[in-house]
Image 1 (cartoon, rainbow, N blue to C red):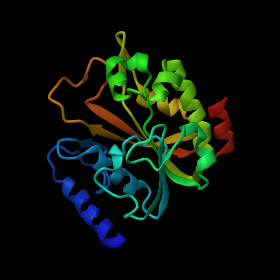
Image 2 (image 1 turned 60 degrees about the vertical axis):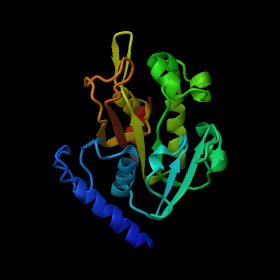
Image 3 (image 1 turned 180 degrees about the horizontal axis):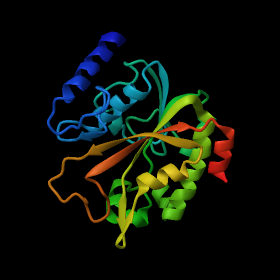
Length: 243
């Protein structure tokens, strides 16, 4: 199958989703602002977000790819993307194994798309995060509190700004969290902590669970936010953001 045929196949699939009664309207035909997971997987959503905001050819970097759940149902390479998938741990999907903060030692290109699915502080998200991130060194070492998380994202911000192209995008996937009766809006905090970037758009993925809208005891896991961010090019604005 040629690249043109692959793109045409997925273009038709995207358009067909718009007739689903649970999707919203008012966005470009390719992508709604709220996507519902009853017949729409996270893998399909990340594919459509990438195709919509940064069509191929482009350099796609996912430095925390895990087992590749975002890419289960499609091939970025077949679509014309140059990919680099890494993580702290070796999986059947990773191309290389290293810390996201060491990406510059291993990746020499300018990324057009950076997919960022950060780990959550283990003592904020309780058993939910512990199960999800079991044996992950991020949560075992660097990220145990919200302050650790903020410091980690601050370091990632500087690394990403150095390696992203001026017209590149970050696609950051995040969920909100409950802790000790508090609601922690990580989808807002992440936009504040990534100081070298400005929020361009948000896509909300509505998971299809038969439960109350506030999700589990720990995570707002009935929905996820996909934040689309672009690098700040205005030097004065960047200085204001980072001071």
